[in-house]
Image 1 (cartoon, rainbow over the protein chains, first blue to last red):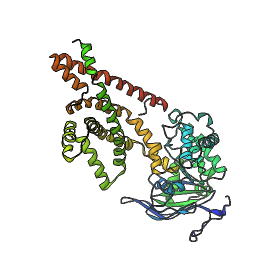
Image 2: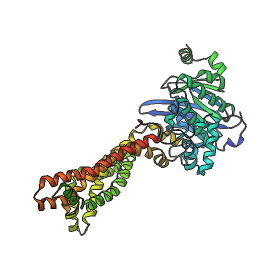
Image 3: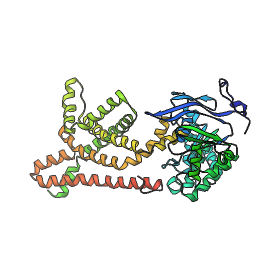
Length: 263
Length: 219
């Protein structure tokens, strides 16, 4: 974990800050869709540089949880603090907060009307107000990082799923985020393309990026995660380091889930 | 009178038809975009006002609107030229239909597009402007071309406001030549000659837009 004391903010005294700074604090967060409670009193603290894998059955609230971190979903109770700023309903400057939090979606969500490089530069030019050639330099740098610079002039529809997802990662990285959120990044991919995306994510983790990944790729979790979180029914059922999580799960629900996943 | 003479006679009214069409589009396009976007985003009373405005222009017979604005407004001290009234009524009527294409195109866009834009830190307006509208406009181009053709054909109604458009010319010629069959057949052909190229242009526009995105069948 990298030491970054500036991330420790005043007014967060009640939070147990991990040494090295807290990137994301989720405290007693609950959320309902109508009468259905999708998150139940969730607590999670992610240290700067920490790699978290969140797994669990569908409908367990894991996607909703990470979507609350950049407020694509609003939580109704509890506190979420991202990079030292608390996210409340009506928080001013939400776009500025989101620029520090990259997100990669299951369905890639590239902009089909823009080519690869314009996908990468759009927010740099429009939100960060970078000059076009400076933005393109940043884009090429990040496309190289995900090993796809030769596709810069192509449109998303001309790329394979794996290539599209790597472009989506590059697009998020262009904003130089402090935290990256991955929402089942490989679930929509053909098996032979999963590896190229996981390789990029692994390299990103090695570079010290703070990551929260919702994924069922248990190999990735074992190799990369500092901590694996298991969610079911809107709550965190179990969390542990990967070695412990996979070899010695405590909760019955975790064991059931793992046995279904691994067999 | 030969058929060619009839056609040339009718096309003496082309200027008015063209002016009313172009001015009509200047009303239709902004109104369609603005009303469609506002209807998509507004809620409650604001949405009711937007919907009522759209429905007024969309659900009233064009000829009734033309008469109402041309003959009734002067009673309230508002005197508009026949061209102004024609362009406004036809434009806002077509714009009312167009607004529904805009709203539908925005609604059918994948929610992931908006989320991806927001997640990158764009404001809601920026997402609309740079992510949603370009895709919505591409998606509604075929519908929009259709509506432009409707507008061209609709301009024939301004002949009733004493404007010398193609239809008005045809009526004049028919009365002078006592050849209604030939003249009105000529009028039919005269509109077809104008509208068909627009259809072709629309198809070409669609194809080039699709080529630009590298997928010919995406929308």
